[in-house]
Length: 363
Image (cartoon, rainbow, N blue to C red; front, side, top):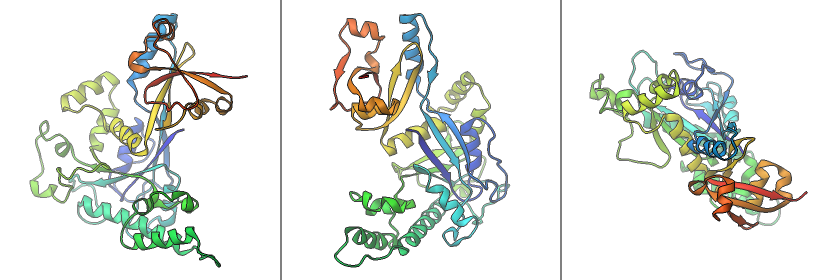
């Protein structure tokens, strides 16, 4: 399975700048006016995973052949800027909202960086207000979807009861994902926008992200109305799109040196992908051999036969067993078997993050 992240936000929040930096190429036009991005730009980036290179080294030492690396991938979709009133057709309106329905997780970019040269559609920088605008428009769009549903005649209908519960919750400003917990299957066909998981990315200046390295050049008053640092949320992170753009112009070694100089452990791309994986409950399992070393994405809690089906649908049907070694214990298949590190797992095995697996399937 591939992860699809939709990058949304108000115009000039830095969405396209971030998108360009994440993809390390200029695939979206970043300009200082609303609606630069009309159709959603789509780009695919590899999921950073240092384990792949290590596995390739092990295979080369054991087999004398250096296999190619195949990373898991993330698809980023840069969606046109939303404005207040989008649910009623303002700006790009319904076109914007329809693009959001196609993604797995929403990445809402809100602006916190001060820059008089970059216009703000709301007139001032206030990330909390911008966040609320996005949330409100998505809720209003979902209410429109629910209003189109028709009450069934006859006996009491569980789906209709859930729709009424959702309508009440949305009218109170609660997103659908906070209203519906265990009954999602009943309204899955409605494709509600606020049912999707969401990450909030606060686009900050270099000074705001790393004040201990870069002295502030703006007065403190110009940096107000952003989230207070001690209000930590699981669905929120900070990224400087400007720093990401600078990183994108460097080669891998230079990137590492620059990150170290700034006191950052990882780039915004790495942190965003990791956060998206955590939010969606995704993990990676690994396969390795002379043909390739590869990372595959699955949901946490996936059983061995269904995991085999990610490689090929026939593998799930013809699954016999899985030979498994944890990445930290893997020294090559030959050596692992010699020292008894290979576990033979059956249909009830729940695959763990970092499992190196060889599937045995019938003909």
